[in-house]
Image (cartoon, one colour):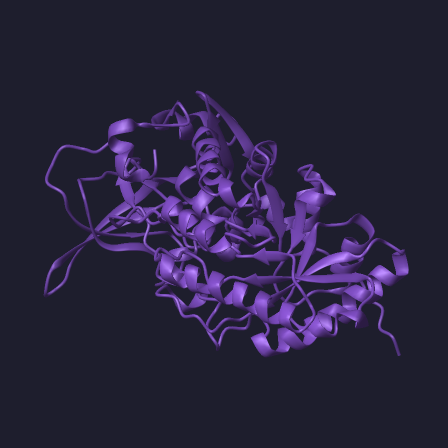
Length: 432
């Protein structure tokens, strides 16, 4: 099951009838009208496909926790032999709590902090990707205080490669905030002796998220290998090539699942004769299609304007829950859980948040709907719950997992009391 387009026919997720999910959740959370649901059977199958496709490269595959940090998902992927890629102190802690071993943790992203450097020095990771030269000094200082073994470091390169996706998820073009220039990286590799506690031996490229065309990713891999050759020619050989992730998935279009096997074949051909370790950091491709957002219909509003009649379907979930359509213009497949008889017509699907941007889809064709019906939003396993907020004073939704017919609540929904629990009236001492 790859997406919500088939939910009307299948009617289940991880062996659990979808019609039973919200009623079952209400036994624990009586006011629940929306929730997240993840199919762990599908996640296991998807991870297996990923591992099989890239087996010739024998890469370390580190799941990008930023895509979905739910412990139940992280733990399942760890049990399947995947590593964890963290982007912050919090995600390092999440990886540790999910029992990813020292050698199965990595740290990527930009803007490293002293606290992150100290964590890495004291508790360990397999490798850190460095985004700016100053981060080398930060890590060196932290490692020198602990006397730990040299830490593997990869320099993240900005290869100047554009991708045909939204600007907010394109990371490899020249104007993006990420990465060093190739010339800077060559100078740093050549000067590696300046950081004796760092094993400055890797190159890292990542050109963006939700990439469906293989060409930019292949070009990035070629650039990484060319840089490795150039560095070796200057007396600084590299032993690690990190190709990041970016594999896309979009059930709203034909061919919307990244051609994983073909891409893996091409990379394997590029790797022939090269004695390097490979690393991949997929996120979205693994988890997007295994998650759905279930939401009750709160209201059907028909507005008769001068030019046309407009149907608005107001859901119990809003942009504070699933931000991607408002933030990226992302498209998600949307379907009623139990379609009613009648002619489909155009509808604008919105949430209850007081923002015009609180719109999931415009002019999508849906059958008749009534208050209390449940709508399923697909491809919601990645960058969904993990990006949700309390905007408009709304509690974040419960997250559930389904596996072999068993439904579990993996994270409870937030209440008004939860939101008030952060309130304080503390005197903050000022330093004079």
